[in-house]
Length: 85
Image (cartoon, rainbow, N blue to C red; front, top):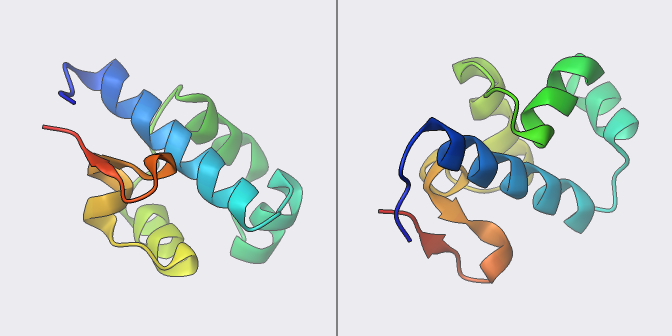
């Protein structure tokens, strides 16, 4: 699967964030409270409007137990993850 541009990247990241949050059974509010993240910012990430800065990416990857590489380059909802070229 090839990432063709910024919109493809944002869509993949949004899918991953939603998948990981739902897998943990968390509401967006609960996650944002636990992570001390602004809910409106997080909602934009999960909607694919924009991407978080490096700090939240690192924090989220640690929280979910996934590598930054996997979070940013694979569709995690496909089980083992489909690497985007």
